[in-house]
Length: 216
Image 1: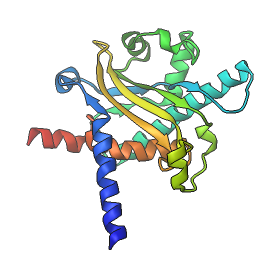
Image 2: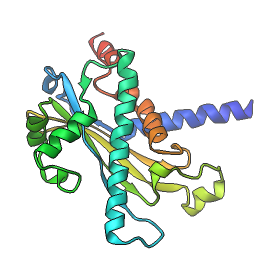
Image 3: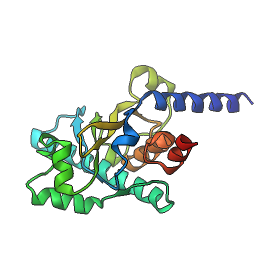
């Protein structure tokens, strides 16, 4: 009985924490009234690994992590889109990356372009982007053994991720969700994105269920 109570309290704390880390533009409905397609771009990644890694190799590893998050987000949205959970479509990331490449844009210079510029190039209504700070290579998997000592020593913290949605016409930030990455977040990039987005699903602004609740 005590174990069940503890789990219920833990779930409640996690949900409240997720809500505190979520921002939504008060003019969201107005700014997205005509949104039909969003593009997911690679995440800008900062790696602070314990082991010494040559600068060029570190740069390549960071790029791989950024593309891994882009891929994991596409997988998450595609699965839920099949169940008709969203009122927008998501551009295929292969098309996104191809169009970026055709315009001389890659991971290394992506962050110098504005949301408006990217949306014009990609012919979409909004951009899903973000930042990733890691002290491990998340795409290769993380240790998942549970230990309270790790939490006190800080060894359970692997970094932080921020996901944001921006409007193509105005460039304004529409929605943002930030979350710490720990042993309990998921054992790899796909699991991390799946778990964190499920926690935020009721707050994701393009969710059809959320829209219905607003109208009622």
